[in-house]
Length: 116
View 1 (cartoon, rainbow, N blue to C red):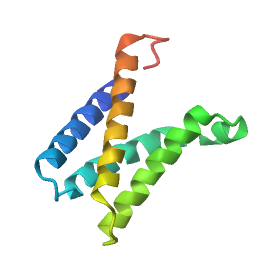
View 2: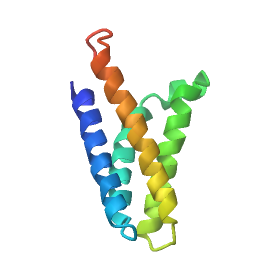
View 3: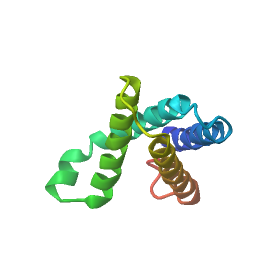
């Protein structure tokens, strides 16, 4: 239940961030903050499966984990004053939005074994 609500919250937060970026072209720091918060949540959820993912070479876990880490790195660079292009932040936010939307649709469409 918590993962379902978290996925919906992530979708809504990223949608708000992307609308903000569309309105205020030059102000992308709020988008980077929202995206970093969503990425941190995803990294923390996937972190407990990393040992198995590396052991069995599960690319379905490692690729999203690497993407979320790249989002965190880009946001950290922006916070510490290094120049990060706005299009990179917007692209990462859009990809993160699509991934969170796919997760939300999957979690609400299927009841696998009542673990969610």
